[in-house]
Image 1: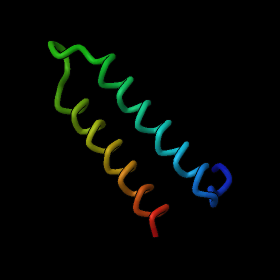
Image 2: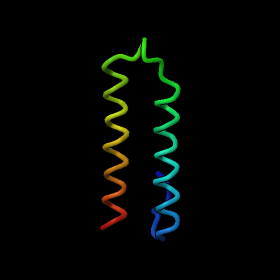
Image 3: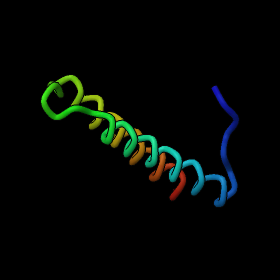
Length: 58
C-alpha cells in the first residue's frame, strides 16, 4: 500500500482526487446499460471516500 498521509493539505488533495475520480466514473456511465453491480460499486466508492474523510477528520 501507499504511504500514510498525515498533513492536512495532502489529505485534502487526496479527498479531492478521489471525489474527482468518482465524478469521472459517473460521467462515463451509460444510463441505458448501468446495472445493479455498477450502482453497488458507486456506493462502495462513496463509502470508501466517507471512511477516508472520517479517518482524516479524527
